[in-house]
Structure formats: structure tokens, C-alpha cells
Image (cartoon, rainbow over all chains, first blue to last red; front, side, top):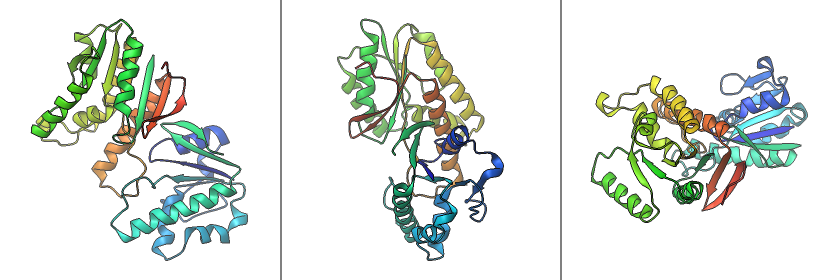
Length: 124
Length: 181
């Protein structure tokens, strides 16, 4: 599994397309559609986390329960961890739960890349 | 040489940018492009502080809050230019004062293209931006548009640049090229 993280609009999906040959039909946009692990690339994993949090599910448990399904995936998650702690309860839990998931996925990943202004910083 | 600097607020981007521009200029001209259009006394105070910071560094200040290519009319392109910041420039372009700050969407693309042209037109360009992309806030549509537009500018400039550096707590994280100091 490849984990790609980075701030909003930094070029994470473009990086995945250029480096792992991801085609449009292989992308599941979790901000728009239900999570589909048959697709090679899951984009906006942070939105899937928000959905989990709103349903009272810990995102890490969600991924753990489906572990065999994403072993060869490219997972793209927005870094939402650096701002002020949100006042809104849901946003606050979303931020923390997404961060916990990223730590778990990062430990599992074969490669972790952070994208900054379109440039890769290899973290693992 | 084109250098792009980004990172969090008050982390040392401007200091690095000033030192870098001075080093690149050597004995040549060094220009500071002032992008802020002051609207109140707080802005004017901030500008006074910035001018004091640069005191003695030999910068010539060019006021250019919009239409970045205009500053080339008043400067020698063989010099070293410090543009601080793309963030303020885009703000002025996207929300023009004379249109009562109503968003001008065409301005975002023009601003991006002009910045790339500007960077290519001068001997040395050091451009500062702000990294505003890693928080868990759900912004309104206008703020999202601004963030998206600035990110596009950042990526276009990073691609064009010889050096891309992120500044964190005064330290440098080099993403591309090598700093000449």
C-alpha cells in the first residue's frame, strides 16, 4: 500500500497518476461516492473519516476490518492536522481520528509520500 | 535563479527571503516589491515595521499591490527581486478594492500567469507564499476558492523554481534544488 498525504490542493492525485499509473476509472472519490476498495486509488480518505466519525465509527477500526482489501491500494489523505483545534465537536474528532488513521496506515505502508506544492517529500 | 519559499506564519520566511535576495544580488540592484495596499493604521504600522526590518540591507522598495508585471517598468531586470508575498498579491487581485471586494475569478489565473512571467523575466526572483492548507476547518466557498487559487500559484511557481524551500520554526526544509547560502 502507498500512502500519499499533504495539504489541500497540493497535487496529491496528480502525483499518484504520474507515479503509479492511476487512471480516472481506478479512482474512488470518497468525498463524493461510497468507499469502493475494488478501485486501486482511494482519494479524499479524510472525507471517508468524516463519514465514519459522523456515524460514530473509529476510522482506524474501519480500515482494520477491511485490511485485506487495501493492501495493494494507493490511499490519498489530506493533511488536516496543523490548524487551530476546531471548536466544533465533529471537526475536532474528525481531525484527531484522521490523524490516528494516518499513523496506522503510515506504519502499514510500503511507501509514504508527502506532497508539498506538487513536489514529493519521501517520508518512508 | 527563481526561489520559492513557503511555510507557516511568523516562521522565518521573510528573514530567509531577505538574506537570500541580498546574497543573490551581490553588488547588483536589490528590489523589495511591497504588495500590501494599506487600508488602515494597523496596516501602516506593519509596513513601518517591515521597512525598519529591511533598513540597511540596501533594498529599493517598489509598491506593487496588483499587476505584478508593472513593477518591471520601474526596475532593472538584471537585479534581484523579493516578492513578499504571493498571498497578499492574490488577495488584492481576487478581491479588488474598487469593486467593493467582490471576487474577480478571472484575476486568479491572470495573477498566476503574470507571476510565472515575472519570475522568468528577471535575473533573480525570490517569491514568498503562505502554507494555508493543513487545517480541519470547513471554509465557505469564497475562502475555498482563494485557497485553491493560491495553491495553483504555489504549484506553478514551485515547478518553475530552481529552489523550493519550506520554512518551519526558522529552519529550512529543502524540497528542490540547493540554497546558495
